Amino acid sequence: MANKRIDQPTGTETVGHEWDGIEELNTPLPRWWLWTFYATIAFAAVYVVLYPAWPLIDKATAGTLGWSSRGDLAKEMSAADMARQSVFQKIAATDIEKLPGSPELMQAAIAGGAAAFKVNCVQCHGAGAAGYQEFGYPNLNDDDWIWGGTLTDIEYTLNHGIRWEAADETRASYMPAFEGVLDTAQAKAMAGHVLSLSGKGQSSPAAAQTFAENCAACHGASGEGMPAMGAPALNDAIWLYGGSEAAVTKQILKPRHGVMPAWKGRLDPVTIKMLAAYVHSRGGGQKAAPAQPETQPADDVAGTQKAETDG
Image (cartoon, rainbow, N blue to C red):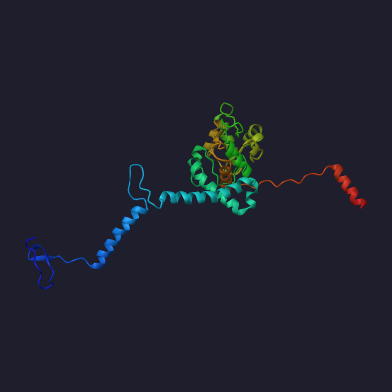
């Protein structure tokens, strides 16, 4: 610019413009800054050659090293899958009732089941497995099991579902509707007797007799339930559809029957086994009945006793 000049105090050329008597000096950049800037340019040039850099229509330049963040992630996921496969194979080879005998394997199964539960089960049973009473989705944290709460029982339920028509071996039980058999007053009296089994209501001789004639065959004389038939216990104050007199009366007159899908064929056997372990661990799982010792035939017993006597 025509107004450029040398600043006398500093000996530096000005840039040529002035504002209110203030002029700007054309001070050169520090040498160290320039070399740093040149180094970044060189680094960038090397980087775009070695690594993916230039975007194309459906991908980016590959780079001479062949590295990519996606490839790195794929390797890590492959390694994690291989590690999981080893655990899955051990779980698959272990009978479900023997899993608790191997604490590390059981914990791995519970962890895998927790992940599967979040994907497949929380929609009905809730994130904490507490269920939704208003919809008849059972709480999996208590110790009340309609069909039994052993690992084997839970695994069977997961495999075949509850009242799932597409599964031939599904669990199925149906409570008859007493509407038209009992009038409203009798139904309320019956509800009072049912609630009295867990100390929550008042019974009457007539209601107790009606219960004995119509309900005890499935629910038991004292309301203990019958898992083999899918008849729930009525004496533990745990209610699938609510424990008020109105809710129990409604269930007596117009019973509701929940449905659970069968997961066999939709989930692999190992995932179902892990789900069973997780549900069992929620706090209400039951232990398997101890194996009964084999009975020795009477003839063998007599022969053994004779041999011992002769000896």
